[in-house]
Image (cartoon, rainbow, N blue to C red; front, side, top):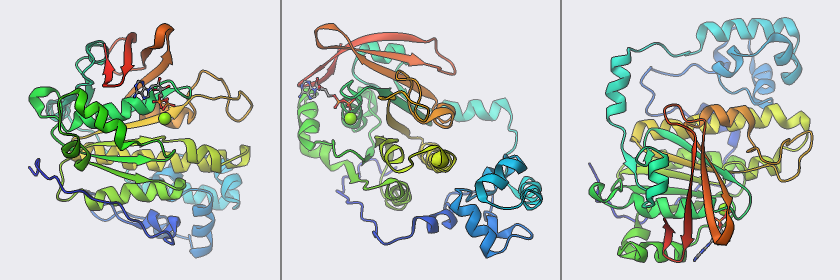
Length: 345
Ligand code: ADP
Ligand code: MG
């Protein structure tokens, strides 16, 4: 393994690249052979394909799970046509198959755990943040989501025996809140050489949601010579939330978000890595965004994340993390501190 790769890499993406184009880029790690696209559906010409794409349907599986009425409505096509498209998608989509429990257990054996270096948080998570998982950290502004991202980025570079993953980190920063100075403080807090740590954290600022999605492809390209063990998207939802406004955009937004999450999860699986995404709670309850204590992103995100951590402030500068909806751990809470040196019990 290229565990010692210490190259400083910058992520560059051509700004004029059409985000729609990205849908047909093939995943290099697809093992099931060439992927079939929406253009391959019988009776779907360029015009219909364009309509489908504009409505956010860029893969067969997304179509296969629709109802004719909803698809007709969202893609502005006739219901009979929608019905045919759905039927064909069901036949042609790679829906996935069943594997034995033994095979799954084998894969689970490869799971590694990244320590937060805070005992109470590690205990809450049954030993740390698991690889092959997508963890959603959500909470209000200032609740400490970005602090967790920074701390785990630092810890990820630690050797395995110190609770790290001895790996490189890709950090997609959408709110311009990544601070190398903060990494330096936290590295010093663990007696690490800040420059060494910084050289293994590769940061890109995402300018909008399309760019954010393109950066995932860029990680795939850049990860060849590196040992990618963690991908952070801070925040996952801010651009989507700002760009897709109004009820009419909701389906489109959810489909894009779903695709983005799938690609992130794929990176986690392929690299035996951890994906950490941050998310805000609804600040203004309304028809579109709902309950102020709920994370945005709705069911799409709830289903995609393996673990969800809800952060909030407690008295005397302390923080509370609550584990929500874990597949194999009890829900619970823990208390910790954010200090100059990083997160502490
Ligand atoms: P979020 O990403 O959820 O909006 P942050 O992770 O940016 O919130 O948390 C910001 C908080 O982290 C600050 O209000 C402060 O309490 C704490 N914090 C940030 N830097 C430091 C530091 N160097 N020392 C101690 N606490 C810090
Ligand atoms: Mg933040």
